[in-house]
Structures are given as structure tokens and as C-alpha cells.
Length: 478
Image (cartoon, rainbow, N blue to C red; front, side):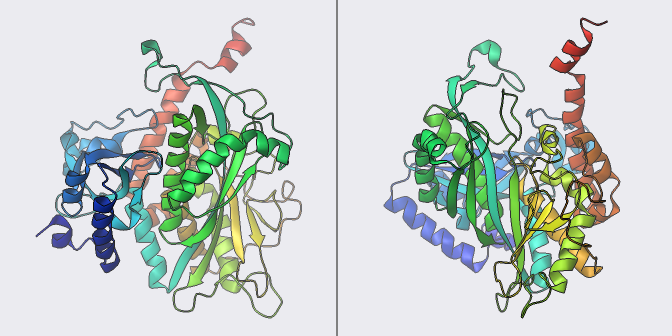
């Protein structure tokens, strides 16, 4: 009996997808298959197996070291893995032991940009079949099941900004290596500022067309490609999809754009605010709604006039606002991302909402009898782990429903209304999460402490560096 069979890990749909997958591998003569899992940062890690070995691993799993869960954004191991409990308080995580990546057959794709190559997302399990508690795809799936138990599905549409530059110098000399290595030198593809003009789009079209072709061929639900306000800045939007799919789409999209760009001499970055002259910050706006599993009806929609949101929708919105400060670390997990929260900048600085207003944190769109009624949370940065971002939204929204939380009136002057200010730094956001009773219960204290530990390791490295600002401010004066 295989590992998958022994522990009942696949649904009927996954079993059918595995059968189709095997036929595709044979028909298209695939040579290798990448097995990847999304780590705590929303970065894909894994192994590339020759096709025959990958097929053999479909139901038996592929081993990978537990240290993958111990790394910060510099890929440094920040837990004492060779001590008792490995720094996690879990014997299974000691000594850089192995866990198993089990492919999700429904995620299978053939890569358009790599010859004879397949791609599979995986879930990570201990040898006894238990999910690894720090694997964020597991965590998100568990939250979705809570919503499903109430008779609902989560629906999300993605609106993602990023920068794409021409790669001038990849900085690949040995002295450029490190943890992290030297960033590349780049040049612009467009001057920017001409927001949504055809002139700027056409300047970037050569690379955008390459990316568009491969993203569509990959099977991702791409909706539009736009040029944003900043130099070399663009935006991709995706059709609304249910459940696990929008989070998987974001993971695959980010990785795909970086790989495709690099192969053609470009550098794509989902860093919110690159340190380059005249560059503007990028955000990730998450459009979300909740629909009935039985009827497909939008639970946020009202009927026959009156209020713009149903009582369910208003309470869900109230939950998003109440838990906004504590959930910010999931929507904005990098030190850099907080440089985006500026007043009067089309980015939020406080936990408020408004009717079709781009200055608020949550923009309400739609209205009576409109099945597209939704909440657009504008808080996120493009580097966020989508499984944590979306899980935090659902948990916060459901708490609002359970406690009939009132979001208050629409903020028509968003940067002047009285509302809780969002954290100004990752340090503040981590402190808020660490002491937040709601998320400690909803996600489990073990996961919250784990995530806080990793983020604190990044903060400590940042604080140990002497910045250009300090050099300029103090070196001459003192």
C-alpha cells in the first residue's frame, strides 16, 4: 500500500488527475518533473526528478529536509536544528531530518518555457502521515475546510503589481555571492508616469507578450495586463477562482514571471519598493467574496435595493477591520513593504473601508443584485505568502460574522477618518501579532511563535546593518 493510500491523502478528483497526469507525461514524452512546495515565505522549494522517478513518487512521496522550514528570507537556517526539538519543540524536526513532499496531481502543468518539463505543487507530511504544521498550503486548506463546513466557498481575484527591468549585470562573480548575494544592475523598460497610456504599454510589450503567452499556456486564469504609474511597472489581474486555486495561481505566477523574465534577459521583482531612483511602490489588491456551496449565490450581495452589502458581508468586513493590525504581517511580511503605507498615495495607512474609494484599506465594490459584489483589500504587498494572506482574511471575516461586528460608515475622506492606524514597520506588526489572542487561537500558538521567530531573525539582521541613511546622517556631522 502506498503512502497516499495508507493515509488517505487524495480525494477522488486527485486520483483521477493522477491518472490523466501519467498519460500526459507519456504522450508528451516529458523528461523531468519539478516537485515544489511553497515555503513559509511563499517561495517554491523542491527537487527536479527524471520523469520515471517523479511518477514513482506520486503516491510514495519525495523526501526533503526539514531545514527548509527553518530559513529566513536570506535562506539562513535560524532555528537550532541540531538541538533537542530542533528549535521547534518537535522531535520530528531534529537533526535536519526528512519529511515527504506528496504531489497534488490537480496542480500538474507542463512548463511552456522549459523543454520536456512538468511542474507539480506538493504538500508536506511527516512519515506517519501528519501534515507538517508549518506548511502554509496545509494551513490554508484547513481554514478553507472551516468555511466549507458552514456551507461556503472563498472566491478571490488577484490584482498584482510588479516591476520588470532589463538585466544589465547579474553580478555573478564569486565575490558577489552571499546570503543574500548582490542584487543585479538593471535599466528601465519605460520611463513611467504615463499611467495606462498605449505608448508606455508598447514600450514594455516585447517582454509582456512573452510573459503573457507562457502564463496563458501554463493554464493560469489571466485577465489583463496593464502598465502602472511607475517606471518599468506593470500590473497583472486574474479572474476570480475558488478555494485553493487563487493562492496556487499567485505562487505559480510569481515564480513563472521571474523565470521567464530571466531567460530572456530581464529581471522581474515583486519587492514592493525597490531602491531605484523614481520608482514607485507596488501592491497586491485582493478581491474577495464568499459564495454558497449549494446555490453559488454571493453571500455579500443584497437583493432589491437598500444596503450595498448583506448583513453577512457587513459583519465579514467588520472582522477584516477589527483584525487588520494583527493580520498585517501576513499581507505585508517584509521590512520593505511598510515603506508603501503612505497617506494620500493610493495605499492605505489605517483600517477603514469605503464605497469605491482607492484610499481606504478595504474598497467595497458592487451593490444590490450585483453577483460581483466584493471586498477589495488594498493592504497587501506582492511578496506576501498567498496562503497566509488569504487564510488570515477568511479567519478575520468569519470572526466578524460570528460576533456581528459593525464596520461603521464608509470613509469618504480615508486619510482623515478616525480608525486604527496600520503598523508602520515590520517590528510593530510582529509585536501586534505576537500578543494577539485571536490569531494565536485561530492559527495555533505553535505556528504564530514559529512565524514570529523567523521574522525576528530578519529584523535582527536588518538592524545589525549600517544603512546609507546612517552614514549620510552621522558620518560627517559627528
